[in-house]
Length: 293
Image 1: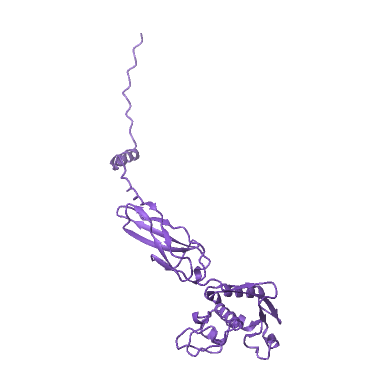
Image 2: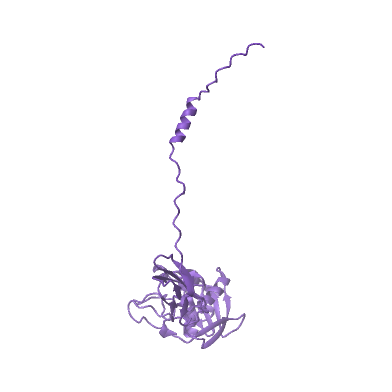
């Protein structure tokens, strides 16, 4: 047999310096803990035993009171938030809430939030009330129609809509129990939007400057409707409030109310005062005072 070739010595593989450094870096990294620290569990909420409710009559001027309901465990802290047709009422965060003019026709509810030691804040809401009624029941119903006279440069549709809003407002004659319903024609009186130049056609007592009431006609001067009065504008009062005032004032004449003066410096002006011409120390006011209704 031929002689066996001598065996080779085993080859030593040399690692490149970059690989050695990488291995050393990984070895020196801190090892992650076996179990990550657990996040704290959220606090449980209280359980509702009896849902919140509202006590009191749903009528303008009445006071409602929130019953926070019953909870388990027993609540330590309680907050209230009153809602009108599901929307938060600004500033209404007490247990009691007095119903005002903006609430008429709406449904009121209350959101109650409670908390106890070791428990999270928990909320529940009451059922809504029925629609809030006017302060006074209807004691007189009147009908009216809307017409125009002369060349107009303003929207009659807006006039018609805003006049009805004034009549329906719980701060107005409706607060005294008078309900106004618009009809297509005729009615108990006629509400007119007239061009300034057409005002004297109703009577020589109707000027081109102001509005007036003649017989069955409650006549609103278009210039005043569009621009209010100099005194009103000087006081920086809203045009919408002037429109409330002039409709309430002239309609008040049809209802049988005459002009009155300022009851005293700093007082709200009666709506039947001629506010467009001067205040005598009173403050502008678009709505009939309680004594005028």
